[in-house]
Image (cartoon, rainbow, N blue to C red):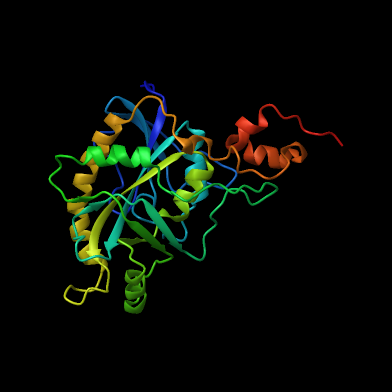
Length: 297
């Protein structure tokens, strides 16, 4: 069976979402990249009449911790397959009384509290400073918002996601500190994923599945894997229906500014790149490298 639709949309599944219901899988690939191998085989197929790639962020069987995920390889591999838009799914804890376990939230802002992750592709011979004031794609988030209508679940259509290093959950003092910063949810995986998607000029939006109150909540049990899994099973079924509807609503063309994020971001003289550096970044910079000739010498 051959792929009938070009692959333009990707779904990155987080904790609990290791496969996509309704995806007609045509083939499995695990591309090599200049940054290593992605977390797992990427499933390519058709969903709601669209070409879709599905990647399990933690790998099948949940083998890879948040810190150890090769985010660069994941994003690069998806771009190499033709993806231009990514729906990310992440389990999160609530930092607000009004955001309950079982709710969905569509973040519009991120705070990076990670400490051990590489957060850029451009670490060898090229320097780029992409704009990141609005880290989630508003166009893609709008599609997710529309897709949640009629799903019978409470949806919060904006909020700040603070990303911690993990894999441990927060201390009570840390949790209270984040609440003072007026964040809505806490998780471990959206950064550097969102930064790398922007550098790769891909639209990126997150469907956050609220599984618990973080340990700040005095009248609820402290966050634990067991309590999270109980809520997560219910959330995942809803998330799959939302994602299917969102994929159906994605337009065939896009003029989103995410796709030109590198236009004014690269400060390095691209004429002077060595062959090895040009090869490393050709996929990411091919629009800018296409008309440039390498200096001899």
